[in-house]
Image (cartoon, rainbow, N blue to C red):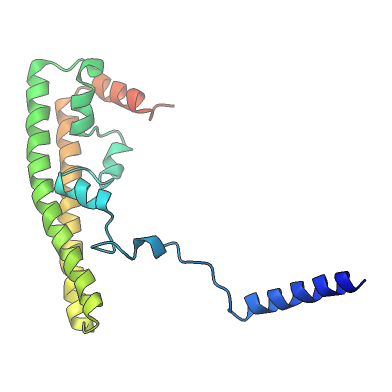
Length: 172
């Protein structure tokens, strides 16, 4: 009986301690605190530096507008003609060069935003400018990738676009 009462008291006290906030679960962000730029992982920085898609073109990709990188990878499955291959390669090269350049601008904007908070002296007007700069860059970056999908769709025929969707797993 004493052990039952002791167990009951322990449960009540530990529940009360949890309720008053004495014990907190660690933040899901805790492991990100050591990042150079808190909002970007090393993988994100690598992807942005190389001009990778970073998932920015999903509205195009998932609505039947093939991406140049994947089209080049699937050239045989799609039966690309030589002229199509050259056009898609040109679209990809230009997209990657522009995206890589803009990616570096975005990384620096995020680095500046992080530094503003690290310094603990940022103001609301300065913050507004920093956020606007980062988001303008992200917007340009997204446009670069979406526009490339739009261009590629004009190079491929309907059968190739359908085959692309099937090979990517989008067909039902």
